[in-house]
Image (cartoon, rainbow, N blue to C red; front, side, top):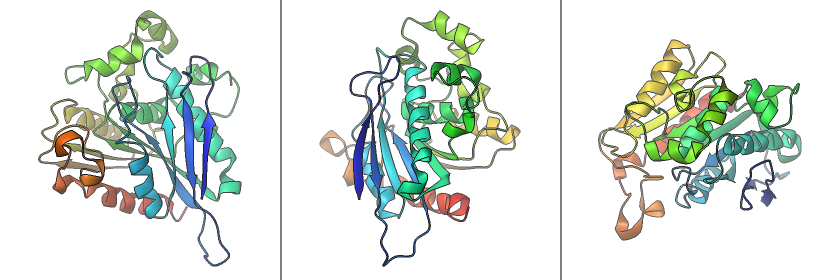
Length: 284
């Protein structure tokens, strides 16, 4: 396995920003086509990146036969669009190495949990926007270099409205709301409310949430799905009847202090995501 770390030093990046790759080795003993890659964006309210939602997820996708990567993106005091630029940079790096790493260049899936879900979905809706190319210092470049082919969104932060996780948006904007509004050409935080940004260019998505999530209400996923449906973008949604926020794998492998974050009926989400990825990308 090629387990490598790529430091990220874009404008505004924090010293810890990095992409960690888990690239499965090829062998003459196995006739395996180029594999999809799942790029994990941990949650943490844009204040930290959760260990529970990082490598444990990557390892599970490795066991399913995919390549994987984990993005430790910049959080507060870094503000928008720093983390978004880091994710775009990471997708482009993976696509540039697709031949060498035997990655399916049409099967790069960004996965995000909670605020990491907001980050993953942000690339899904903003990948072709001029402000992102400008922030990357890539004006005139082909935006498809950093376009994700799909999104797996786990209890994602989406909306800045009635059902918002306010802390995520406060950390994402810091004291730069006016500057971000000017960049996006619309008032923030409404412009960062991703149900307002979905278009027919948004990639397909797999989403899951719990009905009883009291930190990021299920309406976040429902509003994003509704917008995707209106834009005629393929999607799959699973809503589990019970479970708190930040479940990650929802089993003992990612249990929190005192054994919390175990919700056995929710642990099926990753096998459902596996089936979705197979149907969407393995034959492309």
